[in-house]
Image: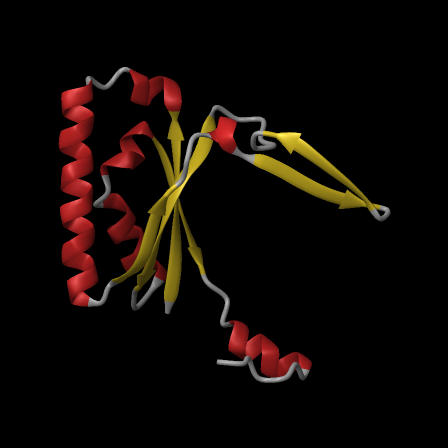
Length: 129
């Protein structure tokens, strides 16, 4: 089953990390990601640009509202994600614990819904290749 590991960071905690240590952590993350991809466990990953580069879009009663930045009342902001293949939620949680970013925020582990199963259930046409 696929799990999305959503990486949230507390920028204040991360700002306290010296640049050399951050670079060392990032190098380790990239190398770990390469190993997990070679094993077929990590299916994809990306870092996100800082929250100030984001826009939040909401449509209510047919009217769109676009706000600068993420709309979150928290000091932990979404920083990136890892899409993994794991045999269970517990295994995915163990994978999340391997990333250093949990020390500077939180990694949310969420099962990915099988959209093909939903497509069949609701009677939607097969996806085009």
